[in-house]
Amino acid sequence: MSVERRSGRKTAFLAATATFSTFLIIALVAAWSVFYAPGPSAREGQSTIVSLPSGAGVSAIAATLKSAGVIRSTDMFKAAATLTGADRKLRAGEYEVPSGSSLRSVIVLLVEGRVVRHYVTLPEGWSSAQAVAILNNQTLLTGTVETTPEEASLWPDTYEVSRGESRASVIARMRRARDENLARLWAARSPNTVVRTPEEAMILASIVEKETGVAAERPRVAAVFTNRLRSGMRLESDPTIEYGITKGVPLRRGLRRSELDRPNPWNTYQIDGLPPTAISNPGRDAVAAVLNPPSTADIFFVADGSGGHAFARTYDEHLANVARWREIERRRAGVPPAAPEAPALTPVPEVPPANPTSGMAVPPGARVITIPAPAPAG
Image 1 (cartoon, rainbow, N blue to C red):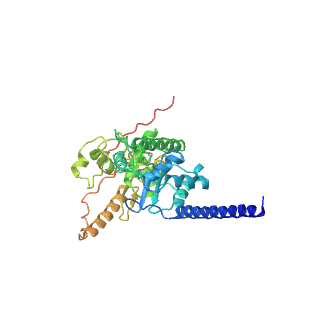
Image 2: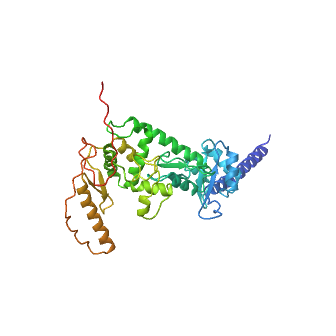
Image 3: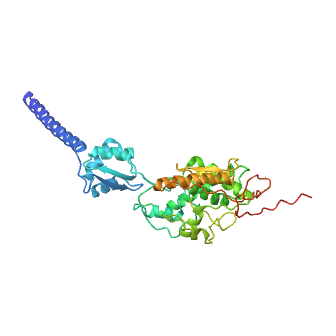
């Protein structure tokens, strides 16, 4: 072969190589620009919500993203995912993709698993009817709750939920959380608790929960109700009357005298002991307070004007606390201070304690439940 021919072939090879290199560079630049260039704008708003099912492959994910308008080309997405090794790391879930996200940004979002997280909170002391309303207001959930759960069967907490999850499954999780937490708290109960079963604990805890919104007061309120039950007094809790009227739907007004006097199964001014069911879904602190009540002699409490309550061991102390609260109410309403009451012409006879061993003075007219003394062992 002549030198001229060899030289010609070499020149042609170099030219072809240069051309290929040029095309390769152009292709890489184009791919680079597509990989980092802004993606499609969101069809509505500033982002697009897209859900990727578990077990979906790269092709199915690419098709879902393309259908949602998040990427322009399924082929480019698959190629980019394969070349970067992301095809084995893409995670299922619900994603919020910002408008105009580049292909690279979308892949990073899916690899890092930055999914949209949804939460549902059941506050302490809310009724089961209110819990169902909370779930019904979550449009990302599906299905219906056929029957309102029993009071105190749901555990107040914040739960993470997924788009498309059924409301019934969330209720089931709330039930399981209640059973698990109650079992732990019941196992750690004190011998001082007045309740005899976990169900009684939840009933009394639900009343404690509704009586005060101050967490630090729950043990003391639990002690008041424990002392009342032990001494044979009625609980006389206003929230129980409200529950008997509305079955857990907020009344949004004060109780009327006629409602206090009207018998219903939950009216603890009219019934002895605990009501037939709980009146709310109590939280951990209220349940723990009932199962481990502090040792106090308090049997009364009334609002003190600061959001909390004033506690008292005797009826006279309680009357003084009530008078202070009434005066606070008058000042807030712009009503002049009340005139001092005239002294009684005859002294009110002292009322003996309901339980001779308790040392607790019961106010005049209070309904007392007589607790028989245990029979002597013989």
